[in-house]
Image 1: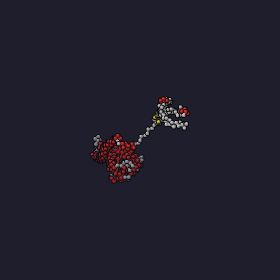
Image 2: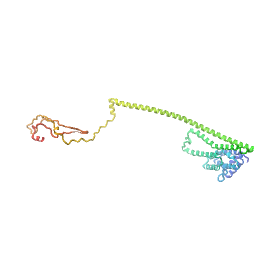
Image 3: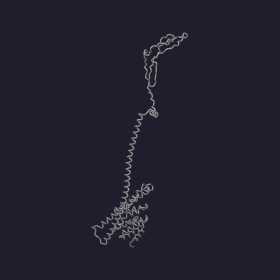
Image 4: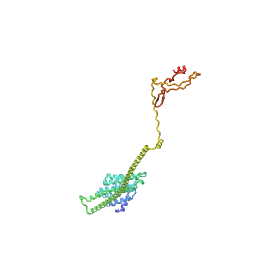
Length: 400
């Protein structure tokens, strides 16, 4: 069958995950290896338009030499090229393999994703592709795993999921995803272009015939052009991301300056109000002091009514002083005799006649204690009443 786009698409459409189908397609592709670049382009196109299971079969085409379980096509093409010392398909697949693997991996069921992961591990173990390209493949798959892991909790209220994501971050996230998508395979593309350039310009290698050399230079030009386009797209994406970040940064810087100005203004006003408050409080204290010193009696009376009266002083529970046991001298306590008024006795009465007598004042010392006032007559005898004229003898005897 002659090589053309329809023939390639027909082969890819008829591909399934059986060993015979993959081996037959790989042999036919190897036969037309001089069209490797076009074949890879059609392979990527078919991969984009296929279902998840069909994409897995196309990935199997990248590893067709895996005979024990599932056989993958593109690796068979690559390893057959190495056996024959041809790296046409390795160079053709290197710029697109990371993106193609991500397309097949994204949205596939967990079972198919596990199979694609095993294919990538086989490529890594057998060093099918260069290290930068292999790292780009694993990076893209890791990004898809992270995106899938953060998308599920978004329904539960993730801060960056669904409608809760800030609107100002939306263009930045889109730009960042574009950069990640383009920068992943970029290293592999540039590395492949550099290797091809060094290979074709190596002076130690004998020059082939003119037609072969012209074809190689033509292929090198296509590789360099493809790498240049990839780099330009990545540069454009990074510039867009940086522009968005700078806009967001300028917005927040402006907001920061406004917040700082507001904070400074509020601090000044707070200090001003505190000073006014201190002045007002000082004036109130001075006014209260002057009213206490120079207030009128009426004001004092009102103040006394408003204020609570003082509590009464409680008398101390000190016992009274002990009295002297020795009585004072009688001479000191005996008052001077006073003249008694004449008493007119009634002859008809046997008792003492009624008389008006003046009782002299006796010495009545008074002791003032802290709690009780006591008064005691220190003289134990009756006062001297003067002459006992007119007093019955019995009464006089009693008075002695």
